[in-house]
Image (cartoon, rainbow, N blue to C red):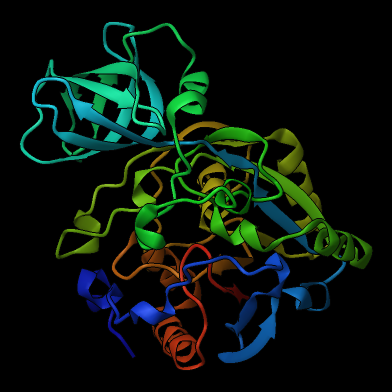
Length: 358
């Protein structure tokens, strides 16, 4: 057994992920993904399939899904001063101290960017389309930029942005098929820089089967941001600073949760984003409606208030997502499950297979 002091060590959430285990393409059928089922009560593992969910879940269970929609957040451009290549990832729209509308971006380029510098954003054909001006850089390395335009942010992204495929999939080079495949069937509210990937496994047919089984569904919204990509860079996990992400849990969803708990059903969070949304809304012990920013960082020792079960993909090593699933399943059990998944040839990360933790 691993000691509590050890669980604060970031290296404990690292593991060897073979490159061959990282899924590079989505399956032709979303619901054909494999499913590793973990039972915390018996400490047992079963090899199943996503299509088995209607048989695994019970009529009184409530699935909570994230209805955030991925926006075309990847940007390509050049530095106006040097003509050097620049790449960026839109994370959020914010209001600056002076009331200006600003964009928060991750940025990649050679050399050092400076406040006041301008970036020329290019379209897919390499033509100049827009100008951004660097305003400030925060301690986490992201930039606030002035869009230098009154154009609505979503219109701007639709015009010049591309599918924000993670770099571990085809080096981030998206294809036309990814526009549809890197989006869940629940996506309704634009705002995410990455897909809530546990939701990628569902199809209308599977949802109808779950409905016939009596499994209910409700929605939360969490717009996925930087911490999906960022590894833990500190030696101790409690030294890692979480960035905030916007989330919303409605009165209707809260009512569905209360009803489910009242009839001894399980609240099944589809993805870590749904977990963080629900636990943010339940921080005072009882789940209440919530709208706003959350920087909830779930680590071993956390007492879960709302979530009874979790469907999630397999995550990158040394990330806050690995910490979260270890807190829910138990570190040693999770470590064993990941070893078993690699041994059994499961597909990892965004386009990969899933695990269900009961």
